Image 1 (tube, rainbow, N blue to C red):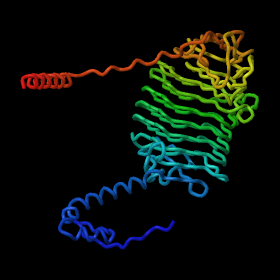
Image 2: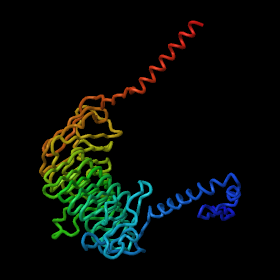
Image 3: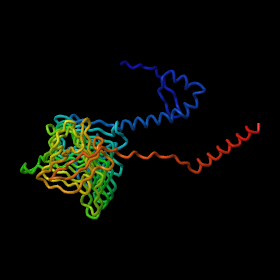
Image 4: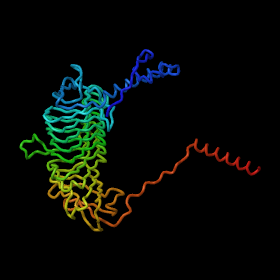
Length: 454
């Protein structure tokens, strides 16, 4: 569609000249436009200029090839060589790397977006990088559609020799190509001191092949490492150890949130999620160990609130092991036959203590006494205890869950009432509200007396 061109004229402001449409120029030459021209418009122009500069710094889109690879310095001289990252992330010689903008975006307009296309072979791919200071790295994304990555992929990476690091709401998306090492939604690393936090990051696997996946990863030496509310969402692709020798040892791992601290530190993995939503015909997880929230290394380790979600389409998926999930949620297909397992595990399952199990089967008619096999770990090591998720039902029925002969079995009970509705909050009045109510009632009383004496 053709854009209309307006005649322009230059207006002299207070120390600044502006080009404006001719119709607006007439207003600014008038007496009533004097104040706006002298005071408001220069300020507005400066604000607009700052906004435009900020907008240009945000949402940088980089694709390779074409484009250039960079050497990203970190620490006291280390380097991520041949790295694909936002333009000018390398910075001056001898200075640690930092992308021109590392935060300020949002879910719909990322701070930076970096994509590897067919024919590219970088060593590293990073949606944004900060190895220089304590600015948080947030809302960046890296995407692999084709090509080969020799090492890792990071949606966003914050690394410091000494100081607090934060990586939040970054995303790595793999839809094709090969990543020889690990895919990270976001990584925060504090090497010698300080805390590290990785939260709200996502690794989305829609295809391709890789060795390992982390939704969020936090490492702190001597401090607190926290990985919270991160997600791995897998709907296609192949995950296995490409470097294993012999290939029979080609195990791999997927972790919703991974927190690591050295001895004496604290590691917390909280409310992370792993979602599996594809059938074995398109998804290869047979040699993969799935972890919800993995806390390791520190003197104090916490893993809580971490969830495994198995969609109906994932019926029959095979995995090597399940660890560190405190909640498991299964969506069964309406055509699921009794006794057919949703998930098969070949090596080990550790439910921990009272893992909460919930399930639903949209469109399925169920009856009291029906049993469903959620997990079949026959021949594998299995441990821990399970309970129904508090307040939940299965298609409107109460249910029980138990481990029988290395299988997780759900048994349909009687029809239930479902979760107890949340209590409705009753509004309360503070001191000011009570005083106002008192004045209102007093006024009504006076008006009533006057009306009665009239």
